[in-house]
Image 1 (tube, helix red, strand yellow):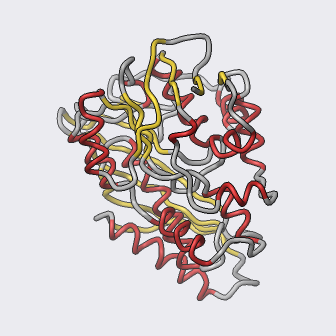
Image 2 (cartoon, rainbow, N blue to C red):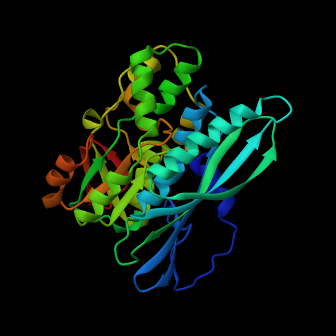
Length: 322
């Protein structure tokens, strides 16, 4: 669902306060955080979707990495995961499901966590993902609500997975570019998260279905700030611009644009850059807000990390494209 539709669906639901619930749904954070003791909080999330690649193992690994990313975006470490499966068992060979589950399990094991069960249903379309529980120190979290004016904005993975995945369905992506796409989506955000905590960061989100600007707008709203983003500095996967020029489009991007239109000062940003900034990402990187003094060291420690803007005092728009 798009961010606007989701916000409207959640709006009528009553809010329940509890001092143990450090992070709930109100700030559109990536996971919930519930305090167990002074030095232990549980971090919980769930994420699943239909295949975006043909190979079952690769799909399972990417879907798992995407779900695990929510834990890393909060500064947590994954502990356990439950498989969530929709599968057309009367149509597709069960070997396909085995490979999906194997890919997911390998990603979870790489994260140092364990698959402890799951739930499956018969569905006309394959779907897979995880419900993940992690742990964090409640005194050292990454949340949407902790950005401060003067912080630098760091993005840890290049954009363009939505456009490239769409183009790949029609075999319109070169093999080497496709390999880069898969490698990006399958990579865990573990190192980027740990480095953010070590650098003293308190604010981060992962960039997934709402696109870079959608997730950035959640930081702006939760932190009562504005974000200045320089489109020219935003990293883009090889082939993504060409995919857009060749006609690749996604429904998710259209929903993201409708939601973002009044929130963004677009400046002179052209259609191609807009398309990349709102492109729905699968297993994208982290968007981290860091004190200026820590930004350069963080970038040196995290492969692929790039400074793309800064946090500024709240203005008339949540996001300003410079």
